[in-house]
Structures are given as C-alpha cells and as structure tokens.
Length: 150
Image 1: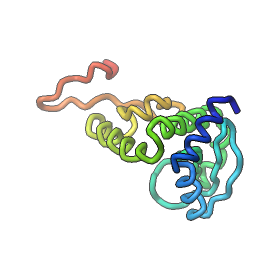
Image 2: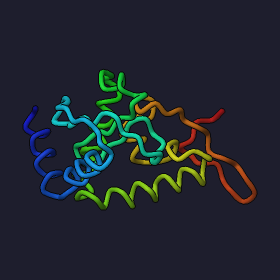
Image 3: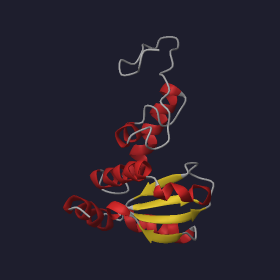
C-alpha cells in the first residue's frame, strides 16, 4: 500500500465507515479477504439493495455471488478504490446521504442514478460498469452544458 492508501484506510477506520462496511458484510454473511490498495473484499453479498453487483462502504467492497469474478477486475477495483477515497474525503458515513442526493439529481436529469452522479463520474462511469445517458430535455429545461451533444 502507498502512504496515501494507508492514510485513507486509517482514516476510514477512524471515521467508522470501514467498521460499518465490516458490520454490513458480517450481517450479510460475506467471506472477507484482503484486496489491493488497502481494500477488504466481502464476497457473497445477497440482500436485494443496493442493486449494484459491487459497492463500497469505507474500505470494504461488497460483491454479490454472481460478481465473484469482478474481484479480479483492476478497472472495477480502481473504481471502488476511488469510492473509498470519497468516504474519507466526506468524513465517513456522511458520504451516504451525499451520494443519495447525487443519485437523485442524476435520476431526475437522465433517468439513471449514475450518469450525472458526481461521485460515480469522479470514480469513472465506465470502470464501474455504467453507461452515460444524455440529459433529458423537457419543457422549461435547458440542455446541460456538460452533457455530450448527440
């Protein structure tokens, strides 16, 4: 681990987000393994929500059974590692309501919770398995200048 990854891991442990991730993984009866970049991989997540095949809480990446092969994907793990950094920058669990607001904004603008979600965009949409959708145009709405022109 790099010094910054060690700092992130320590800060996410201190701010409680990694402990929350470990608690969630334990409650979901996931098996735990060390991952790259100071991440902890929790395999076998079964609850219905969230719908994602992989998601991060602190430094814990929870993977669904069907997504076991994703643990070997350097692109996905880099994406989830960026989310881990976002937890650290948001001082831990405040990341969750901030992420929810960003997802709702994106859903309202595009019909998709990821396309205009600043957290997903910063983590890399494609690396996370998302496709970018265009901003909806409707009555009284101007085109988003950041949206690609189609």
